[in-house]
Image (tube, rainbow, N blue to C red; front, side, top):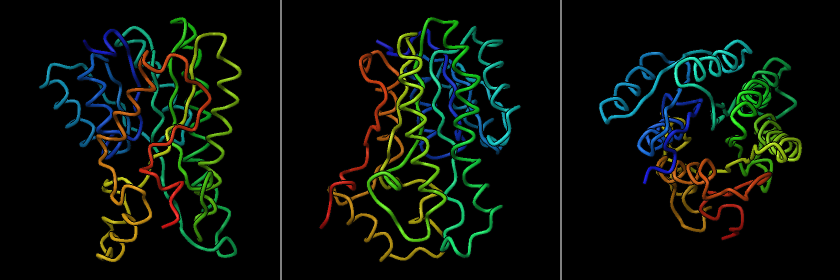
Length: 256
């Protein structure tokens, strides 16, 4: 049985990695998906793949920092598929990694606007559409960085991702009685194009370090994270809201 049959979902940051894997999984599980990212060609390829598998998808390209894209995504979900039930606000950036004394205000705002202000804007337009359907599931990609761990040079990233968790808790309390569940997924190291282990200058030592800090001593695949997002989107998690949902391979509890 398709666990998202009849549902309509928005997935941001869908050009690659976790967002792409989640869009394909949601579509296989019966959802009509609206996918977003900055790269039109990659989104078009994703839509073609979903449609080739018998699914339904449409793409809206744009910069997630802008309020107009947040509104356009919801308008597209309503116009093309009839409403909105699930939103996976996944798009984000690592931003500049440097000591805070060397970070400009513009660099700080770039990270906070992309990761946190976009989460606010997404919810601003997604919540009314879900209320019109009698409820829904809002999911955000946060991080253990800034929540259970700190890393040098990652102040803006940590602040933005920790801020998302605060937003999740407030929204969960505000809209729970209206049938909207709100959760954050906190991935561990994941083998995506944006991972530091896939950077041009990454060494085997970097790969080994990232694997070693996890209890499972390996990184996740995007599909593994996507399956946890599916759980939060589906009725299987009907009594889960306001959580920081760890899908981190034990990185938050490992000291070896």
